[in-house]
Every structure is written in C-alpha cells, then in structure tokens.
Length: 541
View 1 (cartoon, rainbow, N blue to C red):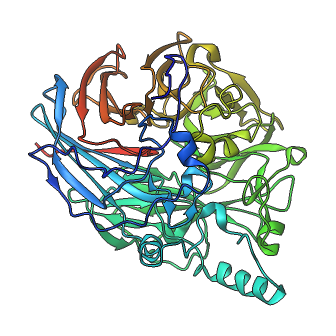
View 2: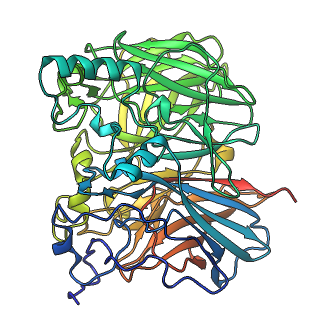
C-alpha cells in the first residue's frame, strides 16, 4: 500500500477486480456483459500504487440497480430523482481516451422517498458506444477527435472533410449534461447536435435520438442549454458563416426556431461557447479567445487544445441580445477570459426610470489561461504527482456589460479565491433565481496541492465569504442545489454531490444548503467513476 498523506490527493485507477462483487443482497446485480478489456497502455498500472480511487476508473457492467444504505437522516421533504451524466468508460481495447470528457456516457440515478434511497447506473446505448463494444475500439470521433490523428493522403483528407460535413463521422456519445424538458421528457447532451439522446429517468434506458423537427443545419451546439418549464434555449456555432445562431424550442416541441444571430468579432472562427447565461429579457453570448480551429479541422490537424486555437490577440467580447426580438442590444469588448461554465446573469436597473443599464454575468474563470484543457487529460489525473503544484487556478468572475452604447465592459473578481482554494468549477444555484439577482453559488473547489477539484464550496457573493466541505482523498462531482418545497430563503434546501473516495467507495453526499454541513450519505455498494452534471426531477406527491 502506498503511503497516503491527508493533504495530498493521489489519483489512480482501481484494480481490475469485478466492480460489483460487493453489491448488497438487496441489490439487483446485472449480468456482466463483457465490456472491452481495460488498457493500461498509458502507464496506468504504475499509477495504481495500491490505492483504489474509482474516480478515473471504468464501470465494469452496463447496468446495476438496488437499494442504497443511508447514513444520517434524509429530509422528509426530499422526494424525487437525482440524475447525473458523465463518462464511465474511458478505455476500450488498446485505446484510452485522452481527455476525461471523451469517455462513454454513464447515467447515475438516486431516487429519494420517505427517507430511503434506491440507486442505479447504466451506460447510454449510443451508436458510438455500441460500435466500440462490438469492435474493441472507438469507430466514431469524439469531440476532441474531430481531426483524425492519422489523416493519410489528400484523398483521405477529402473523405474526412465530407464525413465531417455530413456528420456521419461524429459521435452521438451524450456524456456531459442531462435535463428534464418542460413536457417531462429527459434529454442528454454533449457538444454535437447528433448526440441529443432521450432517456427514461426511471430505468435509465436509452429511448433513442432526439429528432429535431427543423432544417437548421449544424454539427455543434452548446452543451448547456438554458431549460425552463416553457422553453429550451441554446446556441448553434456556425464554423463557416462566422458566428452563432441563438435558437428557442418550446416545451413539447422538437422544432428549433432562430431568435437571432451573433457574428464573430476579432477573427474568422467563432469562439467555443460551452455554456452561456440569460436574464429575464436578454441572452448573453460570451466570446473568449478559444476559437474553433477551422484550419485544423480542414487539414485534419490537432492543435495543443484539440480542435481549438488560443488567440488572445483576437480579443474577448460579450454580446447581449433580446430574448424576444433577437436584436443585438450590446456588443462590447471585455478583458481576456477563459471560462467553461457561466453561473448566472441578471439585469441591474438604473434606479431612475427602472431601465436596465447594465447586465451582470458571472462565471468560473481561469485568468485567461486555457491550461485547464490539458490539465483534464486522463493520464494526468491517473498519475500521482503530475500537475499537483500547477493545477490551474480559477475564480468567480463578474462581467459588467453596459447597455448604453459604451464599447467596453468590466471584469472583476467577486470573492478572494483563497477562500475556495483558488479553484471553482461545475457550479449550481437555486434554479428559482436563474436570470435574477442572487447571492449563493455552489461549486467544486480545491484544497491544494491537488491535481483536480477535491472539495465543495458555497460562495456568498454578498458577504464575500465561502464555506467549504473537504475530506482527504475524496473527489466530489458537481454539487446540485435542490430547494425545499415552499422554501422561504435562497439557500433553503440541500446540496447533493456524488463522491469517489481513495478507498474505492462511492456515495452521494447530502449537505444542508444553508449551513453547508453534512446531514446524510447515501452509499453505493461500489465506487463510481467521475461524472459531470446532474439534474433534479421532483416526485409528484
């Protein structure tokens, strides 16, 4: 057994023992269907070091479900289903994906009712996953692999461009986000429009592709649409017409309609917009200097940032369009920034005629440094000691975007980053405050030294302080806020986060959202690989 130091997080894969040998007697253990053998090609064996951390391991079965052990006391009002999406299989045959966000999608479900909990996981039956399982290697290009590593001769490159343009070469591996639509359907998404997949929230079975009933061409989409009870808002980047289309889809409909269009500024290629923010009246479209590499895609050449170029000289911009007319009401240059996730946005009134004069937009920002992309390489996370003293720093940053015709906006740090370990990512808020002035952010933080986010933090934007949860050797995923029905305060509810431990265990942590103190743990009988984003579906009482 390797020596473990409490202030030093060691990350590795679990040994190759069956994943479900420790399943509880009440659980229904699915048959092991023989997933592709795990490859240790990237030196993973050397990284094991006798530890069992499951965060960067692979699921060993497609499906499991059963009762979960509850430690502590769950609130009586917590009745509903928590879903989390994320990669659960990174190694297929002799192939290991490079970044963590290319692994095959695995859903986790925890159903809460009357103080008890049941759980399940299941791999999404995408065409990409089924093809990899049948052939022992990936056959479709994941998002970081739009450019093949061995493009061959000119004719092969032309074929690649045709397959890319038609979308046939792209993956449908919907492994990033999961959302309940306003009509009750549940959709999983990633960066390609092809990977819009409907799932059954009770069984986690894959229903099939979400078929858009429109003629809006486009290969890519924002992974984080803004979803309400009445509409679905998202962005469609256009690699060849230099911009983004802003589209809306009504609840119960499969037809997207264009609200407006944002054109590029500062370069020929659109910027990557992984997420964006909205207010009651406006949609904020961020443009950071991380831009799609059109030249790389056409020439089948990867850049140091996969399919992107980092072009700080091209400038950074914030565009504001009206949700109802599609008109651009502001397009301002802002200080350089690098952000994967926006937290929230709201309108600030002038106090005279009750007219909006400034839009506020908050994000998790990396000091205009794209190093976080390579820091999320799987081999780095699986290898102890790599990147521990250089894990990229992040802050809660606030943009002030004027609507009075001023040509530039402001960017400021909201809270001393040392309060949350100079790391902040995978954030959530009380959804009742989406698009409105708010006070609290729940996110993954850092206890340094580390080579990944290893704590949870509640950040008070008004009092400028933070409360943190940390347990040595644990890797928590996104903390999701779930409000108490009839709650009277913004932080009246709980926060749920799935945690992988250094002992190879997995559990859902339930924190009181107000005090940020632990009130319960819901234990799985096995360790859980890391996942990205979740959602809450309340149970009809």
